[in-house]
Length: 468
Ligand code: FAD
Image 1 (cartoon, rainbow, N blue to C red):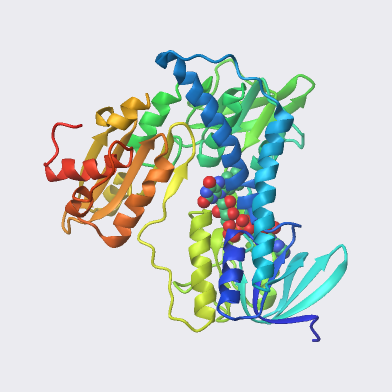
Image 2: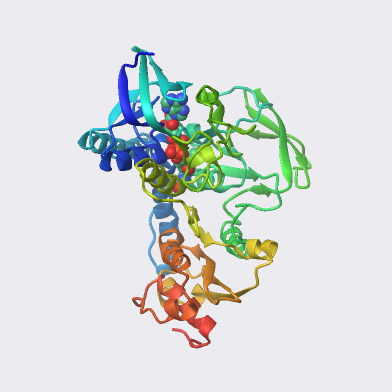
């Protein structure tokens, strides 16, 4: 059929995966169209994910930090919270970044088409908006349509029951809040709301919080957060909720369900995972196979079963993280341009931006055990770090895992303040296949938290015994 727009590269979805793929394709000289249903670029990450949550978490971290200062002889009063202003700060952060993206798209002559895209056939996509319909004819495509929050079907529709997007709106600070799901997103929002004054219960179906993280790291986090929450109910399910005038009355079932029965909350955050948008884009019309759960399978070059259509980001599977989407996007754009790129990451880091932060990269100890990989580990407690002690925050530790056969680092984790910023060195070490001496003999600046990575490697070498 006749098309309104023709291009070499069509990108569906303008999240971190989509805009990165579109920008790389345009930089490689391809005429590129980027289709997005929302008014702004940036997807979940910029608009309702990574960035707004970090704007609020930064604020929370400052309040938490100040709360440690009486031990140093400095006291402030109780924080006065102006929610409108805090919301305004967060919205300003989003605006700055989405505006920046629009400028970057323009500079590259990426044509942004606003509307909901649906494939018509393997070379056409229809975009529907309030303004009408447009058809885009494409040579290559990258599907970057992302994911959405999973809903619990038995919960009633009520403004007091929200997902992460609703929680980020920060309409008010509830007195009592329930967070359903003890994963990173749930715990980050719980950190924000508890610091702002909410009393919080967390309920998690599995036997531990922050699944996927090294259990030793999580133990320190749990100890430091023991007072933050009223109840953490593990191996427990939310089974029903009733909206009443007094609040949302939630019932639980499981090992740690409250014996007193249903509990009343002013706000319930559902953070039980994210579901891919694979079934919502007409993929079948393009011949692209979608799994039962809505994921799109790809090979190492990010190709779907249709050779000129690629898929990247949350829609292709776990871990659902922005930095994974970006790297996959670059591969897809480069391959469609004829380059021999492929995705071959040895590690994809994860960070919980809580207090303290928890970060890990490469394989965890649990994973090594499950996969039968023999490891040697090395732990450096921050109680021996001059900087951590000077910061008054020496609860953390840095852990490195080396493959016993090759002596190369295969993973590591950090729990402590700024762990998310510190983990990058471990990421690089894993990618480069460093041996303990490579890390331990690298001179790290003193006194820093980053030093703990060098020291962990030196501990392994048996060099460093009396620190600092
Ligand atoms: P998305 O960001 O989901 O973007 C997909 C885009 O496609 C959306 O803009 C959507 O509107 C658009 N779209 C979908 N279907 C259509 C259609 N048919 N037509 C037109 N447009 C369409 N990750 C991190 O790495 N670090 C973090 O700190 C972090 N924090 C998070 C906090 C929260 C609260 C949440 C919810 C997520 C967080 N994530 C974080 C995850 C991160 O946001 C995602 O991994 C990332 O956004 C995935 O990027 P993506 O490009 O695959 O898709």
